[in-house]
Image (tube, rainbow, N blue to C red; front, side, top):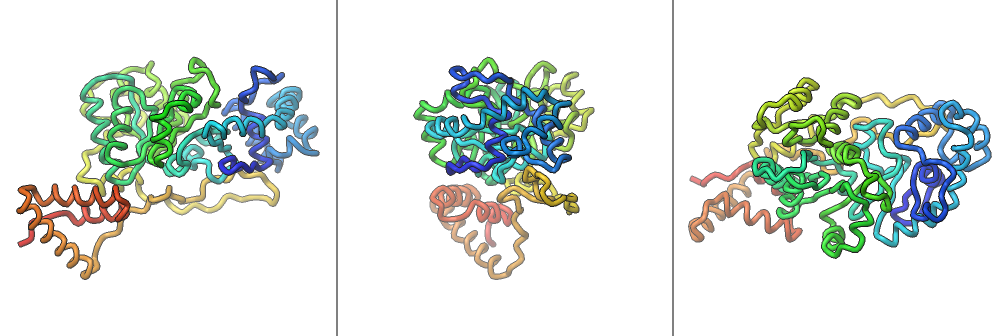
Length: 413
């Protein structure tokens, strides 16, 4: 597109016309129901076979494409949806006035992990607020049932802090329990958070507290549903699935009911889509619902030795190189994820072997020890406090803090 700066590519215009509900739909109802994510996935596959693009539905090839796709959807439906293209710009102006950006699957800024984890069922359009870099950068997703169980909240707080200190974004729907606790902990520790709420984005437009957080660059919200969607029409399972799929991996807490939206989303990701790393908190009481997910290869979340351990765990091992897919000239591609591509900031810190740097770090340890003796604190506590303040003030990169912890603090001899 990108509608982030007001411009719109023909492919994005067509995708919005074919799949999205518009703010003025109540005043100008369409004769056809927009395509769902699954339906658009089928159509996108057909377009690739026909060496066509979504934009061709708005051009001279439209009549032929309507006929060639009639075994999937009626010509009348596709024609009626294509005619909605003239209303796209007006919809963008409404959303932009509320601080809401829009991305389609044809945009390079579209989160790559949604395509990696949900494949052809990735939402054709997503709406959001706040920094798009937070949304597309991957992270650690936390999911679970809505519960005020203290043990679940404790897991959320613990992993939210780890993520913040590791420069990893926390992703969740934000519902009560482990999910909300993880987000609170991440933001409290000056980290980043991304929420996929089970409410329409319109609800956040007039909330000053949310606007302040979104403008701070530390929080983003995103949804596969248009901003005006009534809350009762939003599927909690879809929301949980989107939140988990935005992450590099996900932690499921309190998975004790097969009727819970988080459990259902995890079952989909492990079964229908495969390939995503899902973990559970192994202190949970055994139950049939959890056992079923374990049988599908969900693993226990390990105990982490520190932020470097957590950072490397979330980012995972580097993927094996993959040969580029064959592509014919003119064939439509939805900007597929680059083989072996990693999210921004995915490279783990290197081992420190430079003797000069090691000497400087040793001198730093000695200064910290002297300050600790003066203030009556432990050296490790002083170091952590100083590093946190320097990161918060923007005077050092968060990765430097990770490197210092990797070396560790020890009392100089």
